[in-house]
Length: 116
Length: 114
Image (cartoon, rainbow over all chains, first blue to last red; front, side, top):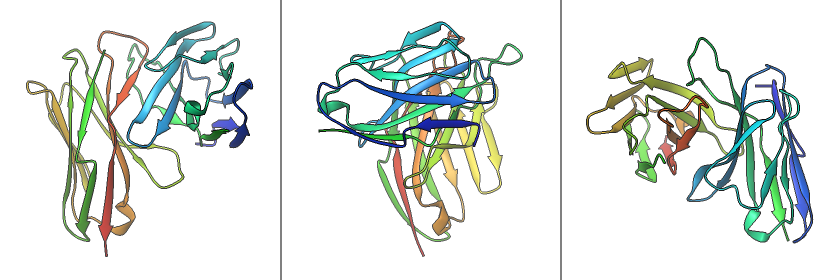
């Protein structure tokens, strides 16, 4: 699990500010994902990426932007933070091997974001 | 898109008892069903998964069953121990896609009392 890291681990910001959460993995996994975790909602997919320069929306993409210029990095940006974006954010990665699209997703340690 | 429902939301058992968590899914094309365990303040970690070509899979005290006709799958934990206390999430992949997307259930808080 040390192969996928997130920074910062904790962040407090104010409404309207731009915030970027970083995710880095050392396995060269093809797929990367961003989830948010809120009480009563489980893990909800924000954005995902199948490879560098290929990204797509998940279940709750509004207010978020992603990019993936390198395989190992998948930053998530909140363009103008709102209180409703207070949450725990998890990054995850998985491999695409042997033509199989379903493989274990490995999660990062999470970033706890508070928007005041 | 895929919808995954998980029940119960909370489950309390005595040490040594069995625990069962059930999930239903909506997309008949889904073919991968993992279960994750998340301890307090930690990241989710895979504990067992099942693919649609099998009906049951077991790993020591943990087993998962799948009924594709009824579109439901279940996690069974036998001889529960206090360290099994955690939040458990089921998930199903998005059928027909190569992106490996997962849709998660809402989670079950399992408490095992010594």
